Image (spheres, rainbow, N blue to C red):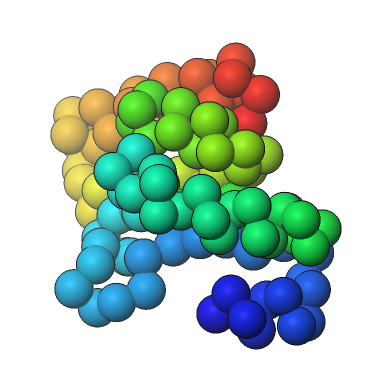
Length: 108
C-alpha cells in the first residue's frame, strides 16, 4: 500500500489495520504499540507530501502516540458507541467527546 500511495501521491492517507485478524471495523490501529514500526510509514508519506491520519480508539495514549509520530489528523473509532444503547452509549459518547477535546488540545 505504501508503494501505491507513493506512486499516486493522494492528498491524504489514513493508516488503519489491514489484516482481518486485526481490529479494523472493531477498533482502531494500535499506534502506541506500533510506534516504531509506524514511524517509517509516516516519514515516507509525509516526505512525499501526503497528509497522514490514523484510525484509532478514543484513548489519550493513542492520541498522544499519533501526535508524537507527527500525524496531523486522527479518525476516532465510534463502533462501540454505535452498537451500544442507553447508559452504555452515553458512556461511549463521553469517551469520544473527551478524546476529541484532547486531540484538539494536542494540535490534532
